[in-house]
Structures are given as structure tokens and as C-alpha cells.
Length: 98
Image 1 (cartoon, rainbow, N blue to C red):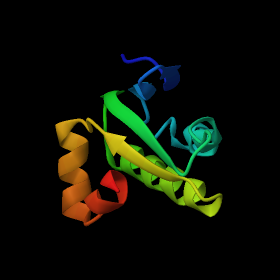
Image 2 (cartoon, rainbow, N blue to C red; image 1 turned 30 degrees about the horizontal axis):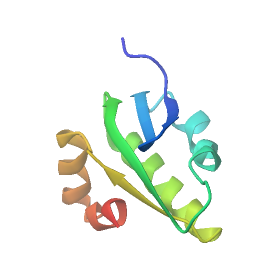
Image 3 (tube, rainbow, N blue to C red; image 1 turned 180 degrees about the vertical axis):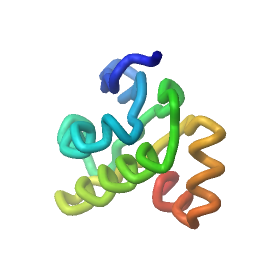
């Protein structure tokens, strides 16, 4: 089983590690504040996400929406292929990739 979500900062930006699934979504949703730093645009490396499903997509979209309310645009890079395919099927890929 994969580890719960971790948000890591390094010199390259932010990295998501672990899982955000149905069981984790409620706890993960308010964590968007951890992603909002200084500046109008934040790049988030999502390559470390595991067990991606529609709950993962919902959380990432909610984070982007919440961030935009404070004037910050989140852009997710390196989305796992299953998550990217789900976003494309739902018509939300452009919202994630900014």
C-alpha cells in the first residue's frame, strides 16, 4: 500500500508524493494552502502520485480552484498517465495544465 500524501518543497518547486484516493480526499482538500507560496504561478510536480482515481482528480481541481481565489495559479506537471487520461476524458486537462 502506498503512503499518504506528502507535499515536499525543494529548489525545483513542489512535489507530490504518495496517494490521494477516496479515503484520503477529505483530509487532502484543505492542504492546498501548503502549495500556495509567493508569486502568481506555482509549478507542482505530480509524478509521485500513486493510486490515482477520480478522487485524486477532484482534489487537484479543488486545489487549483482554491488557489485561484487568492490569486495564485497552480500548474501540475508530470501527471501520471492514468490521471492525465481521466482528466482528458472529463474535459478538465486544461484546468490542471494551466
